[in-house]
Amino acid sequence: MRMSCIDHVGALTYDDEHHRLWVAAVDKQGDAQVEALNLSSIENYDINKSKTFLPFDISTDLSGVKLTSYMTYHQGTLYVGYFDKNSNGVLAAYPMDDQGLLQNNVDQTNAVAPSQTWPTYDKIQGISFYEDKILLSQSYGAKDSKLYIFGNKLGDPNFDLDKGDAIASMTLPPYLEQIIGRNDKVYLLFESASHLYRQKAGIMHMDRIIKIKIEDIYKK
Image (cartoon, rainbow, N blue to C red; front, side, top):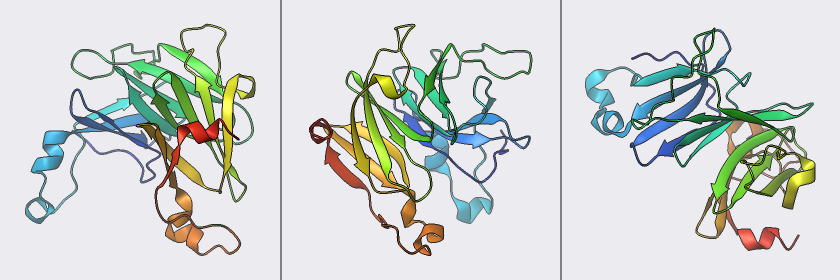
């Protein structure tokens, strides 16, 4: 077990079948990585006794994306995205085995390679699967954010997650980060509540999680 990621965590996602929390990370060389903690490790952790950090149970380097910018778990696959502020990003799929571990499709750099990749919009910050839809958040700087909805056509070789394929979108305040679709709603987490952005004048500071109806996005 080791803890080797840098201190910026781009995303968290939970595998409720194998009871494991996955953390988006970057290794010491600046390459894409994911780390994981078993739920049992979290439940048994007591900082008052250990006096140290909780080491990760799993650490895996990834190829196919430059950085682990955002991610989500969906139906036995870890979907990891790379954020690019100037051009298309990349979404990569990493299937898991029966033990909930990334399948051992290791390339020449000893990193796990994706089973498939798709181009995305630029500036993508978060992803969620909901029913037969894919939701993406887009944000960078103090400009308005966007929430996009796509039909889930990942099995179509001609499909991508770029502008032409979005079936609905909504404009939102700046600094939108992680999102999750659940029970006809989408929950939105904004980075503007952090200490750094609270010092900036002239932007809307969203200091709580916002919930909106997914059907309302289609009305925009």
